[in-house]
Length: 244
Picture 1 (tube, rainbow, N blue to C red):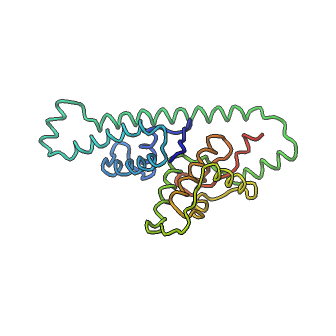
Picture 2 (cartoon, rainbow, N blue to C red):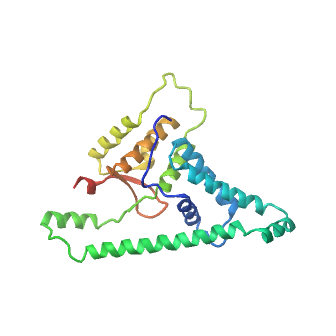
Picture 3 (cartoon, rainbow, N blue to C red):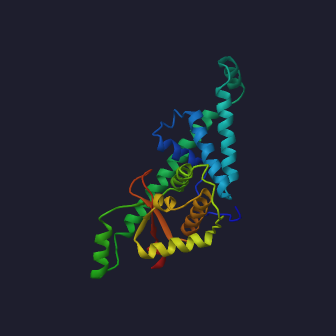
């Protein structure tokens, strides 16, 4: 992949772990290491395909998970001997996750209070603005977590059969072409389902290039990826805030 994405907005390794824990509704104190490690490594494989510049940090966490998993596979007597020699890495990881989760919750509360504070002295609105606000208030959407985007990409790639390679003419796709396609499509429609965008792609290469175009447009604040609720269908909309 010649195109390399550099994201200022990409979450880190602990964010991915918390995402997987929330997605499966797992108690943070009772993490099934084998299952979480398997899911984590699947995300790593997708990140390698995308050539994301943050991959190094995620590989370090992957190594930590593999180490914990290997310790848990040891016979009980060997495991007990190791516990006396060094701290339990699983307990250390749970402690780090719990602290990070509390930090995220506090940051979220402060952000919410900031938004509420801004609403105390709103600018006078004309009739058109009031009508627009009333329309927007009908449905509430939340910006999509980037791990949800990668999860959607993974599902889309699974739907393309491996044997679907007998194309007579090889087609070339570029990120720039896909950016233009998405921007033009959003001029004609208010929002697009991410699954529909991927559904129009005819190969895994086209899906990946389309995904990179979406990430680039998000980075440039031209579009937003939104959901009504976490882990639900993702929609792509224009970022009107950046254009105001």
